[in-house]
Length: 156
Image (cartoon, rainbow, N blue to C red; front, side):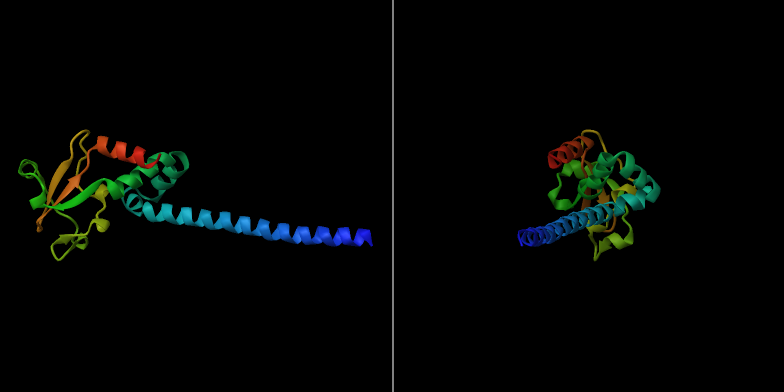
């Protein structure tokens, strides 16, 4: 009788362990799926600019670089009305034509802008200003120093 109770207790513990084990596996699989999904969603602009092969290469060999490229794609620029930019900055601003899909009723759509496919240049220490053709807006391209500091502050 004692042996049967021990066996029953063992089976109950084993079932509970299987449930916990299954939940842990499910949790890690779900987290992995979310991370994979977020990386693919974040890198769509980078993939469009660099191509799938290069992105896979960066993912495998230089994941930090890929993270930085994704960061720059989303946070490397801002769009502002010309009236909020200093006159001296506007006088040196270069003209820029955005793809038509990135402008809605003469208002630029920042989420549509892929900075890597535009003819813009990142300056090491100064923000660059570009007058967006057909609008009253300016694309402000952050300096390399600013981006580097923001990226490392964000990743801490």
